[in-house]
Image 1: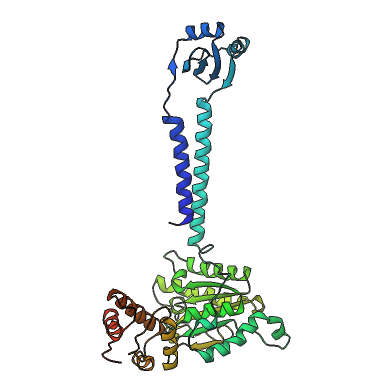
Image 2: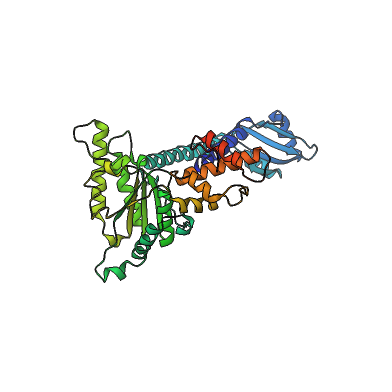
Amino acid sequence: MNKKVLLLVLFLAVIALIFCIFTFLPDNSVYMPYMKFNKLVLSGDVEVAQISEKKVFFTTFSSSGEYFTDNPENSNFKEFLLINNVKVEDGFSDKDFDKIFNICFYIFFFGFIAFAMYKISSMFGATKFKVIRKNKTRFSDICGMSELKNDMVKTVDLLKNPEKYKAKGIRPPKGIILEGPPGNGKTLFARALAGEANINFIPTKGADFQSAVMSIGPLKIKSVFKKAKRNKPCIIFIDEFDGIGERRNYTGTGIDKENNRIITQMLNEMDGFDNEDGVLVIGATNSYASLDSALIRPGRFDKKYNIVNPDKETIIDLINMYTKGKKLASSINIDSLAKCFNGLSCSAVETLLNESAMEAQIAGREEIVLEDIIKAGRKTNIIKINKI
């Protein structure tokens, strides 16, 4: 359960408990007529009296029980008790109950208003996007992509030392596009870039900016850029970038018009910050051709990289990475297995090896054998393997 929701539930439970205690708490005191109470006071037998609005609760020296009688509502009543050596305490009155009830009501009411405002602000994008500050992902966590890593080392240095490059007349890029089939580590790479540069990271998706309410999408775009500038240096990562950056359609439906507004706001934000602001936008897409040409032009998104399915050497690295803690049978040749996995994405390789380990576990084996990989390929419908 969400922590904020849990706190709200606990708060309401406490209020309900207080209400029940004062409303339904059993009263074990015994009623005594006022005339008899008056005689006990005059005889000095009353020890303590607690005066409430309608009743007087009291104890006596001669008995261990608690009694109550009617409050005479006399202005001299308290003085009468004190003169007769009765210890007087102010009791809990209906007015006190009303005060507590009103306090609880106002706490609940304003708490509800604050919660509603929080949810509305979240819907409008003010709190939706989380800043990852301690990012431990590094390029070493990614298999392959050697050329891209080497190129990104320069970008990391630009983000870390903007003044050094500014003195040489070199500006850091505003935006980078990562294109390629799904499951090959575009998100992981963007996170690793932020980790290498030791800067803040805001992960988002194209769907995060879409809304059924008109003009909310542009407001969310504005919100995430404001948050990035407050936490600079910072990387804004937008996965499924084609979800908001698709080519504009000026004769389409209301949804198309809202998408146009989102792109226009994105253009304004990309043009509205200097590279000195320390904000880098990375967009990941499976379809670069569908993106709006104005959005991806140089000066906004300066670089584009293709993240393709891993080659044989990278697949071998992936097999070694994803079989840590697992054990391949000696009859399986990793080089041959890598050839069988040719054309698969990084996530597909990981899924196959994980499912193979589960098959070995079910069969009660410590080692992953060919039969496990064949079953895993059949179950996941990723690949068909007959022999290795």
